[in-house]
Image (tube, rainbow, N blue to C red):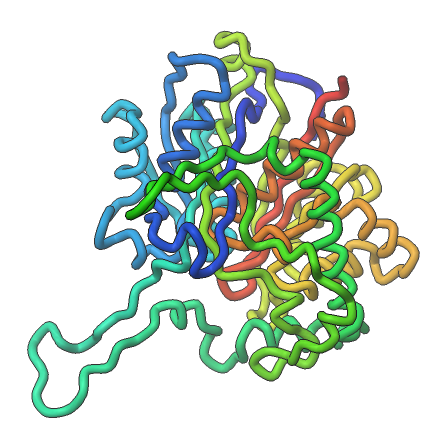
Length: 409
């Protein structure tokens, strides 16, 4: 696949996310619908135009039980609440953690096939608001208790498989990684994020939120709430493994978070007509799946598939983003991409998640796929261009990867 410009290229012209809030934190009472509306409005505002004609909105969301009582058909509800015209079509997608990457894939496909010229891709989640469910009461109950079921447990493993933290931890051991290796990756994620924050890089991605309070002045949130800048290797070493995992602890895992992300994509032809300079070209978005036990491997195989489609090699990637579902995921995936070569694995780790990953930033599952793409894009822009890959696992060992190219300055 050539990187030469064509009028039909699918290009990103704007991208933004909210700050990510931690589980039970300051966003715990904010519907994810409202977070999605915020990024939809902001991603359009950042174009500098007020006449962008959007053909469709594709929105990724995993825990749809959080929004359905308030806003069924949530992508449609979000675009209308954001003030888009009623004739804009919509699609809500659930591929678990891959949801907004799957939305990007669907939008890219629609542009490539001529079904759309302007697609707004978004993802949202607020895991603090996932409700408890009561089953089997519609037709009445007799004697006995009514049981409340926590729908966050709906993100459970497939029948016959263990918790994902156990599976990922075991696969890490299978690929030769120790508990200490995972702790080191988690520590580096926190330190890289803190450095990027201090350098003002994170703020470039974020639209600040003003949060009304029941009492007193509104609260202003302009940075992620989840990072733990005081993390130490010694502190991580004291944490107990979770769910019986051999290597994974809370410190090498992301949180159950809240946030939204959005990417505005259009043909190069339409961008030129609007007078908007493209930020990046989306070369391809590809999907893979594997045995659910091997979730930690699928970002690598998704990147490999995407590279085959583009005709590029791993060594042509300037930067990589791999969602840190656990520290095991980038470690295992990078070793696969390096074909087991230790020196090459270390080299790839130096260009992966250079501003920290989900272990520091947080992981509002429906929003993370788009988040890693826009994080990758902004860093490539800062570095003067180049090609990068963003990959994510989710949905019982499904994986998506996007290859994007930023033209040199």
